[in-house]
Image 1 (tube, one colour):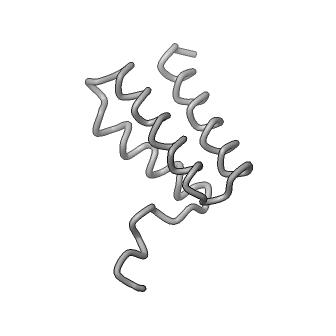
Image 2: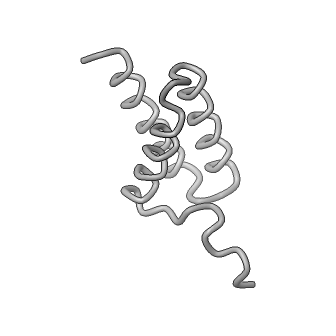
Length: 73
């Protein structure tokens, strides 16, 4: 397993654990942002792919994207 693959796996596990711990509360979104920023800092050449990957993880975990329901108040 490459280091990059291991870093992605760790990041997914962090996001999954945060969802279990906080649900979709603001703390969860803060952790998602931190994880995403850390991956981008480590692999800046893959920034777009990382953003898409994190979005895919959120869908896989059943999370609604952060801004999805804006405007429906």
